[in-house]
Amino acid sequence: MAITSSTDGNKYTIKIQGRFDFGVQAEFRQLYEKEASSSAFVLDFSLTDYMDSSALGMLLLLRDYAGGDNAEVELVQCKPDIRNILEISNFQKLFKIS
Image 1 (cartoon, rainbow, N blue to C red):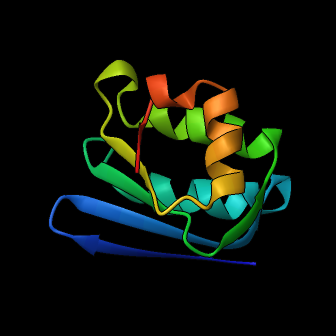
Image 2: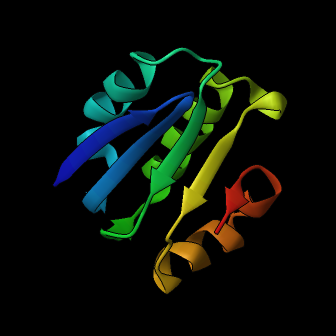
Image 3: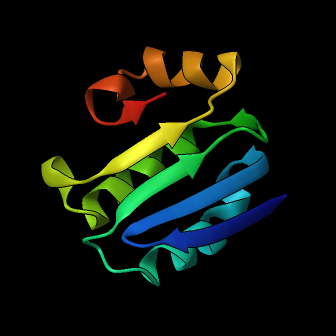
């Protein structure tokens, strides 16, 4: 499992490789908290194989950190299984998913 990040202007991208579960909670939180909460966050799921309910909770915490209803958080390159989990959880109402 690896989480990497990069910054492009005001856009902060986090790329999650492998499993997105409770085992990466501390690393994930440290990555987004080092950026200003006013940043636009992009989560790249192109290399994510698995997501569980704790990952959904981590996404909600990121959303709160980034401004709640005013947050700019986009979930990109979601594989069908990941997209299905997000849609079942109605996350398309909270995040831009592409």
